[in-house]
Length: 153
Image (cartoon, rainbow, N blue to C red):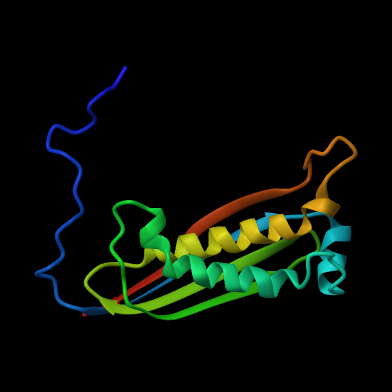
């Protein structure tokens, strides 16, 4: 059964008459891991390679491709992306800061950057996070949110 969702049709918001404005957004999120996995990451002993560098690159790339992943996002001229990590005993926090000067906000880009960075960490460490049944009882991505949004007119 096909249900028509919107009688007016689906369309992107028209931003053609809006002025370019400086914008930045910071998003963050966490991945919970085993204490042993955190130790292996710190010691760079994960078989797939350097976990945080790979996650950083993946996050940056995903920011630049957000408009290809989320249908109603506009392509934006990204002027800066920075992805950092804070390592705790049993979790890692990813922080993504994105900047642009354009007509629309960059929250989706910052959220995408954090999410893909965290998913990349999971992919890199899944062999040591699995239990004997192949499941991930201790692994969890959580707390993804916008921390700060700046719009300078």
